[in-house]
Length: 107
Picture 1 (cartoon, rainbow, N blue to C red):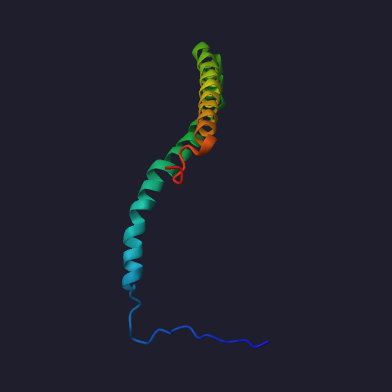
Picture 2: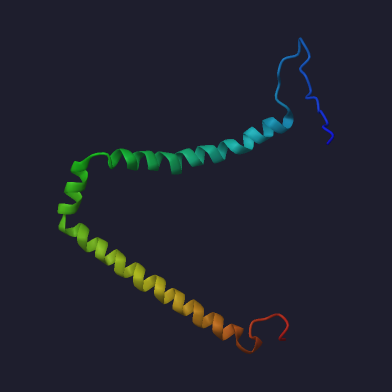
């Protein structure tokens, strides 16, 4: 088994380490993504963990009568909404798949 050694480019003495144009443009194009990620993902997660660190918040939440009603409404809404959409999607896919409807070759 032959092993091939590849030498890495070495820095010349006296030259400063500068970024290549690809590295500069890569950094410029990644920075907006990082800012959006920090603001809209990491900050809300960290804030939620900080808010959830107090047991008093949970006692207050579960003692509120409106909370249980909203949880029940959400469960019903999700159960009906998801199942109704799934049934409608299955019916439509069966309709369009029957007898070659909707395919490009059935003109």
